[in-house]
Structure formats: structure tokens, C-alpha cells
Amino acid sequence: MTANMKYDPDKHHRKSIRLKGYDYSQSGAYFVTICTYNKEYLFGNIVDEKMNLSETGAIVSKCWNNIPDHFPDALLDYFVVMPNHIHGIINIVGAKHSHLVSTNEASPSSVNASSLQPYGTNPNSLGAIIQNFKSVTARKVNRMLGRQNVPLWQRNYYEHVIRNEDDLNEIREYIVNNPLKWALDKENMDNKM
Image 1 (tube, rainbow, N blue to C red):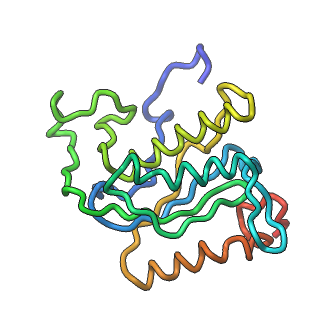
Image 2 (spheres, one colour):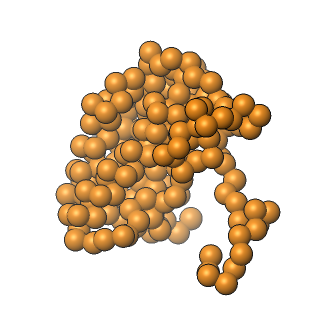
């Protein structure tokens, strides 16, 4: 938005892609995809249907594997780093069922004042985990590449609440096969399909 434009809430708002009213801090399994900014290839390349991590890809992989060190209720499942995105499954376990604050219930004591979202990011929610992961990896990767104030990740991320064992197994297979199917992947900018 330029300095001359005034904020218009009817025009300048981001629509949430999350399930309305769903508590993303409750115990459950979540499939996550996060893409690099402008789908830039930063994390390595696919050779003979296998992902070869670059130094930046190794940083991303290490940070992902460190998530449980910072979020003890998060257990990691299958995960893959691709040239310009990642896929992973995060299980939130043992979480205390938290309550989403509706507009009628908001009070200064119930709102996380440090958050950028209107009602705060629940501290052990999927959103908090991804927010932390994106922030840490962006700092580390940008430092390694010698760049400042350059976005590493797209603004949002895709998530899917895993509902049952069949869903989980299908997503695990998708993650494992992602490097094998890179030539057909919609995130592959070289894919002409």
C-alpha cells in the first residue's frame, strides 16, 4: 500500500485459509506445506529422483528437526525439503485443549498482546510452531546468503488437518514420493504442464 492510499477494511484484508473456529492447538496431526517467496529454488535440486540439499536446504532441515526442542508438544512425522518448498507432518500431542476467543469474549487479559493477529497466536498452536520455524529459518538462511530484509517464505502456508489413519498414510506416501514426482509437481517452475 502506498503512502497516499488509505486503509479500507473492505478492500485491504487477508482472508484466512484456516478452518473457521478450529482450535489448531488441540492434539492432532497436521500436514503442512510452506513455499519459498516467489517459489525461488534455494534448498537444492532433484537429481535421479532424489533431493540433494544445498547448504540452505540443510539449514531448513535442521531447523525443522529442532521444532520439538522448542515446542515439546510437537512430534514430527514424515518430512521432505524440496527445491522451493517443504512438506511435513506435525503431531501436537498432550496439548491442553485451548479455547478460541470470539469477538464477544475478547478482553485485555485473554489477548496475546505480542501477536500480529487480532486475538493472538495461541502459544503452542500449529500457527505458533510455523511462525517460529519460518522466522528462525529466514534469519539463518538470509545470514548465510549475506542478504538482509529479503523474504524467504511466502506469506502464508498450507495446512490440512489429518482426520484418520488412511489420510495419514496417504499423506506420508505423498511426502515420500514428492522427489520422485518433481517433474510433475505444481511447485516445479520448470514444469510446463
